Length: 314
Image 1 (cartoon, rainbow, N blue to C red):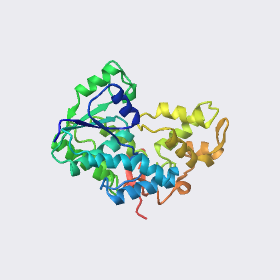
Image 2 (image 1 turned 135 degrees about the vertical axis):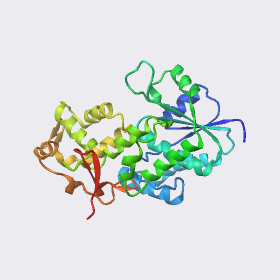
Image 3 (image 1 turned 30 degrees about the vertical axis):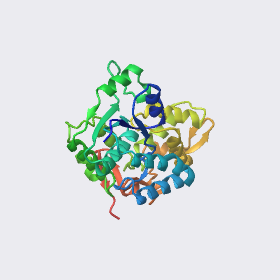
Image 4 (image 1 turned 90 degrees about the vertical axis):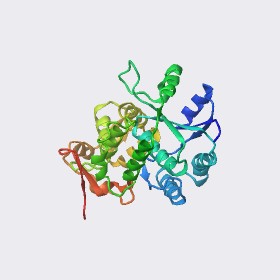
């Protein structure tokens, strides 16, 4: 293998930042959001990408050309880069990044066996109470994170791959128990990301996920003048998910019937009743084609009292 380093980053802003800071090596940007839509374990296979394109086309109206240009061409570049001495992964603490990260590691386990893989993961920063993304770090902090990057052992790679397999399975129930029991893992943000993932299944109380309840709660308790302001408020309060504007707009649109207005933002009487757990919206939201990882979203309910998932058997 050659002497160069291959950097696989969580997004274009990180790639551009590293290039600007004159980091040496090649760069691949992992342009996916595997925390949303159906996923399968075989990262990079034809059926994997077909599944992903179907999701983007149906949920976000992404054209085939855009999907190929934006995601697949970059993936093919990754496939062609086999000469690097070390592969450095650049990801963040949130759910969006952590799920992408374990998928990339699963791919590396299969296609880059025996390569030296290391991880830069932003989150905790000295003298800051707030977790920080890579884009919020100073130049010095980025260099420090790079210097302190963690070499992944074969056991670490196997563990990340195992969590990915569970994430892609048709039941999230095993994830509930397994994610807490590896305190020595270098993936220090993975447990809280998986915890946030499990809260995305509908609540037994009103049929809404934690995110959906937060959307209604935010709309009800803030004087917001537009959908844009509502999205801005959600971006501030829901950092553990790492979602962007488009994802929140998509979620708000699914709840549109529970609002009387977005100018200003107002919940309907029904929306307020659902928020107060006086009504259940599960039946109206249920969709057989809605997936979280490999599991059908509406085949499971989250019991807020026991903090456990229940499988619907009918």
